[in-house]
Amino acid sequence: MSRPVRLLMTGATSFSGAWMARACADAGIEVHAAIRSDRSTYDGVRSHRLAMLGGSVTLHTGAVHRAGALAALITEVGADVVGYHGYPMEGFRSPDYDALGAAAAVTADLDAELAAAADAGSVIVYTGTVYEPGPVAGAEARAAVSAYGLSKRVAYERLRLAGSRAGVPVHRFVIPNPFGPLEEGRFGNHLATAWGRGETPVVRTPRLVRDNIPVRELAVRYAAFVLAGDGRAVSLEPSGYIESQFAFAGRLAEAVGVRLGRVLPLEALWDAPIEEPLVVVNDGRTSATFAANEAAYWDEYAEHLRQLMAASVS
Image 1: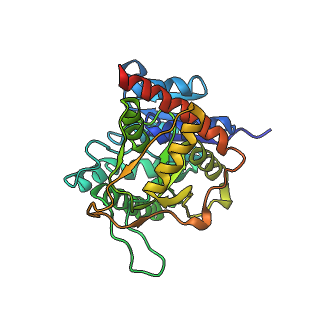
Image 2: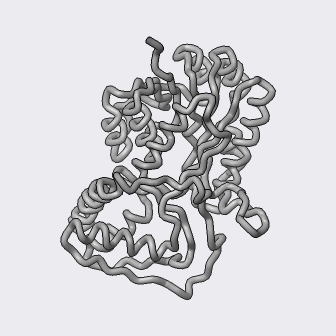
């Protein structure tokens, strides 16, 4: 009987990373997570994410992109897949985000890591973002939406080039806008905080068309991508609800409101200036289909937002 696929991934304490690691473990993958510090040093929502992983994921502390730490771990684990998911996130929404510095930090020990990956027979799955530069159907190529998006593409291109030289395949899994339990500081949190205070939340960018996907569905698609082996595409761009942010807010308010027995109001700033590209989405042709699980995703998310609403009152 063959052993399970071994995945070594960074960034498992992040919102999407925790769910991706959990989904991979649930799919029978042997998951190893490289985290920066001992789990006792994590608090708040990150400690809850680690608790969710329970004993299904093996944690390795102190493994970061420097001094050969991650390279040594690739060898120790004998990773079939190395998931480059962790990324510097401090101030990522700011136009002053250090795009080149962040990319340099993630690729600081790339030669050693790829040498270890080549020896182990590993492939790389790099987590990209929809906010990177990309094509738009029938239009000119989209520029990076943010400094963070630009940084992610710089790191990917450096990884892909170095991977080709080292003989290590590099694949890309592109994340749109995930939402779900254990999120922090995201769109749903903004809405729930206002509703909990008895206020009507304002959607400040109602015209923007974005790609919102339940984080559990995103994670399931990631696990399938890791397991695909030789059938894995070079790049996968899963999609969820492709619609305006006001339409998605309405979808969220209705789905959560029905489950909580409340009418959840919304307002919009229709005349607000649009400073980002109007449409930033993944390729809808590879859209995730989750009809069988859609109700369960909303049940779980409604409970998460109910707790946020209750906490905002106290």
